[in-house]
Length: 123
Image 1 (cartoon, rainbow, N blue to C red):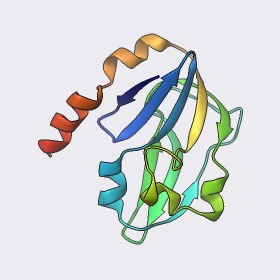
Image 2: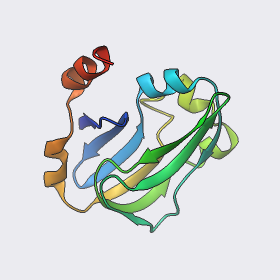
Image 3: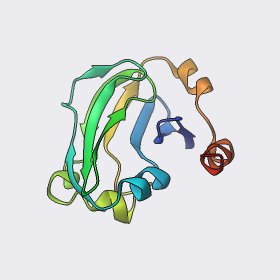
């Protein structure tokens, strides 16, 4: 399984033609205590960069963008009742949705973990 990161602080973990999407630890730290998550509908299709979900914290509301294009095949319903899961485990149990990847070549424009760390260090 490979993990890629966007400049908007989303991650996507890829296994075969399925990508699991969430926000990075950097993003959840910047947002603060997360109080609400709005997930996309299963069956929704997104292009790279489309607004796919919304996360609200005590500080602000923020869009979660699709890091690549694809169709949503599953959402993390746990987040509706326990949005704080994103703060506790943003890279694991705090995932937002899974998508069937439309074009795997779009992953080439994302960063690996080392490049993302360097990117965040420069912010």
